Image 1 (cartoon, rainbow, N blue to C red):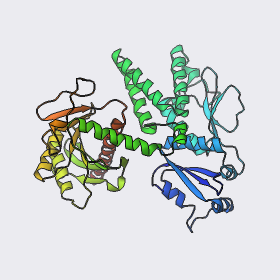
Image 2: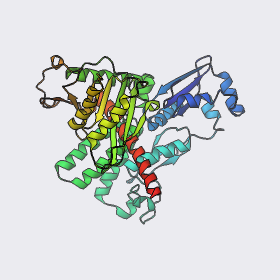
Image 3: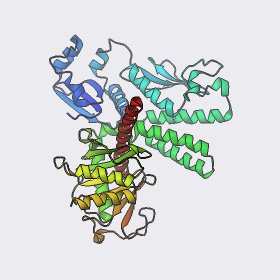
Image 4: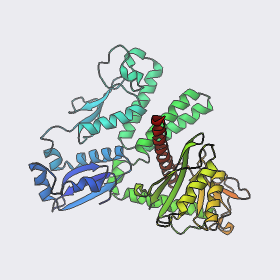
Length: 441
């Protein structure tokens, strides 16, 4: 049983699904049904007595787990999902069909013209889905909205149509509802693509305020759903997440090999990032992917000693020198440095001084270009494939090669995931140290 987010299903001796549930940690959640300390209650105990098999589906995000759980409950209508709610109706998401559709929680399909999504396992799940989507696509949540600006308007969550009615608002609101429906149908990748296209068009037309708003929406949607798959995809292939990870690793290895970097496998990848405020309270983070999966048990924090002046290169060298002293930690097959040629050079200097031959690449912050130093043991110019496709590969210089990964490619998803995690981990620790210093002073 993996300690990962996903869906679990209990089956009886006839392979009939008894119950479907979701969990942030499948192993921890499922084990609660089988420990002597569990106070399950008579209905749950009756269910557990019938369990002969457990299967799981590992997913990418909390929103995916909610949608997939709802999909399985609707598809299979497991006896104990119904039984354990004491015959209460499962909550639904309801979207009305008026000029400004209302998005709300419902218990019955009592309006023929409305769209319904679900059923969901509980009202808390519905509220989480709606709260998450509302931050990206604001909507009206009550049918008889007062003819005055509401609190949610000031929070950026409700357009308040009775107060701000206009042709422009109608168009924007319809677009928001359309996108909400697509996300609930498991088509968030298509929504993301449309938002990126609209943002690029806004930038080209010099509508920078609109582009900034769209960028925030893209970032929010990325956090909650990317990479997003529909419940049907998981239903057809319960090993979908594992297959995605394998594809990511295989593609990254292939792309780096074509640019001259010799790699055995990528079972362990380490990524390093520095966080500081003008050189003060500098911290470093090491995050790890094990077989493509985030492995928080292997994370490490470094409180950088040489602070006082902003020098990312020296800080990176200090962090890697201290990491190299830990021979008891597993050896990575690839090191990713969050930074461009300067940071990659600093890291390579450390690895050379410590006689380490671990392959290393830098990750340019803005362009998301992989920087490959040529002066490392695992680089061979004989492996570099010749290409005239500038869209794929950047210009070479004397000491570095650049690898431009394709947008939305599996390998880029992997690189973004570990880079974002390293940044999050470093920032979290940095804020903690600043907070302690503020309290002391």
